[in-house]
Amino acid sequence: MHSRFRISGSRAVAYAAAAILCLVCAGGYAPPARSCSCAGTPRPACPADKGDSAVFLATAVSVRPDKRFTKPGGPNLGNWAEARIERRFWGVPLWVGDSITLYSGYPCDWLMTEGEQYLIVVHRDSIIKGDPPFLHTTSCERTRSVRHAKADLRILLAENPQQGRRVVGQVLPTSLSGYGLKYDKPIGGAVVTLRGHRTTVRAMTDADGVYDIQGLPVGIYTATVQLPKGFRAKPLEVDPSNGACADGTMAAIPSGGVKGVVRDLVGNPVSTYVYIVPLAPGPPEIEEWKNVRSDENGQFHLLNIPAGEYWIGVNLNQAPSRLTPFARTFYPGVNDISSAARIQVGRETVQLSTPFQLDPLPLRPIEVIVKHTSGALVAKSSVFLRTPEGTYANRIVDLVSTDDHGFARLHAPELRVYVVRASRAPLCSEEVIVDPARTSPLILVLSTQCNPYED
Image (cartoon, rainbow, N blue to C red; front, side, top):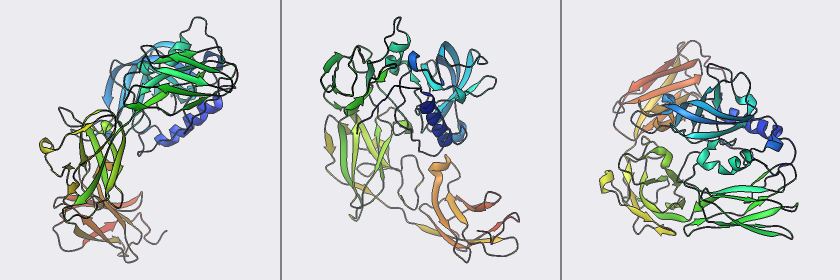
């Protein structure tokens, strides 16, 4: 898939679209469900094409986790950074002082790190007044650590910047990540080739992984790069029009992978999410996980895995559910991580020699009848079964709707305490703690604020 970067004209429309898209995605500046799409890769920060952007350097002085999306004792999915503005390039409102609060987190960005310096490139209207001002940074814009913004800084800090017919880029290997945009150390010494209709130009990346090609004839070019073994990169289309800068940043994708098959103890294929986790001295962190769902034949193929040692597992950070009724299990089929097989991934795909065996947990039914305080049975009510602890997304065990008689049957894969919640509307809900060993139906009575007959 080729990506095209057109660089003539104002950036206002592009930045506004990116800002609006990410604000909708973020649900009012709060981390949303796991989805965030952007309208293409944002263009680099060019002095000749400022538009409505705000560009500045900031250092994260202190960082605190977003407790709403952090499992106790588990990984952090979002954080707040109190940052100090080090340098303003343009577009920062006059009412913004030297301090600003930055929010970052999944799925739209990586987590900010204390002491790290960042190049902030955003639509200036996304900076919210406050004491200090507030900004939700996302990869829908072009905010990134200075280590990975060398191409932009090459343009921003140039004493005599040459605009137009110029391609500046950085070659960055992507890290193993299921959340947001993450890069490892840039690749220096890589040969980049730009091929146009009548022109072919080559350049070598420096120690920061940056290449800078100027004086190009007008036209569309295809950029390719020669990478070390174990990496690959897709060709990239760039269009160095007059008056701005074209971004030629390319992601070096690891070529390693893992293939295998998941079966239960009887030998039947299992369709479930399979995770790969880098070996670590402590508990693996969720932002370093990558997963794929095995198909109806139980087969899975994890792609783009960097060279290294890994564990393979299922339900590593989630409660067993009706769709995935398995305890936390590691390949080849053990619950203790110390007994898990270590998978060595190199430049090619590793084929697991034996099936990944899972032992399904028995599903125990929990019957629920939902009534209104008037005694009327409530149809079409959502009924949730969840564990009391964990982040919201990781504790949903089952979700069904009541039938025309207000009846629903949930399934609990573990003999433990659960929370059952029935909801007909935001102001019409009730929840109770239940033991799945009970045999009589559970009756939930919704409040008087709910109309049981309202669709």
